[in-house]
Length: 272
Image (cartoon, rainbow, N blue to C red; front, side, top):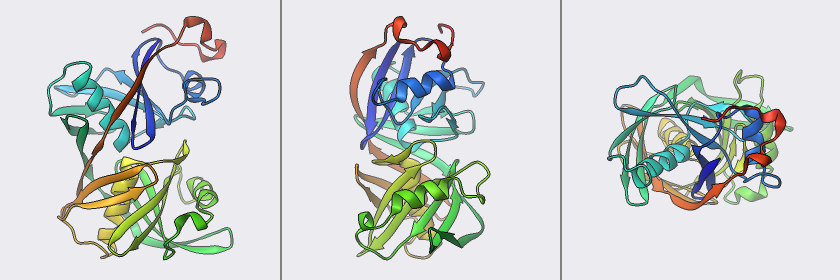
């Protein structure tokens, strides 16, 4: 098996360059940070019927499949252009959506599509004895933004909130969670990803935070904004028509060879 490891602001993915068709068990083993390579997910090239597009399956580290990932899409586009020699801009088909990406060196722009909001979008959810002010929306994958007034996000029990909200009964397919604050005109967030837990950054989460801030009237549309996360900062544009553009860096880390003897027997899979 040949893998390329890359990250977007510390949110790391493996690109499957050669090897067996992935299974949930094999994905869990590869993403294990102690006995495998370690990653927040795997990007698997896949066939597509979308004209002119490149197909990708986005795996979460728990073996589930994500509908969309802003960082994952940036990494996959970067790999296609810099390794495969594909022209930019290019279209990527996730199996749930086709998005346009443009690669500028190590910066990648992704048109993330149209944001939709739950009705009502703003709700109060009772978690661990506290009423949380949340905005529920979809950026091609589900998100729940928790709004707080505290400037020090790490003083809050945001990890346990994220874990509880991810599997809240309101969300039939689970949800990504962001704990966010807008102070002094600056958006900052902590990220709890569905199927991954705490991550340093998330592209779709940054889009969700910015779109929710616009929906709440805290930011104006059609003006680029930045979302600050532990891994770094992403630039987001939320337009009046609720389409969203994401821009941020990608860094390649290493090319990794996995010997066949390592494959766990229960992972199965046949050579691609």
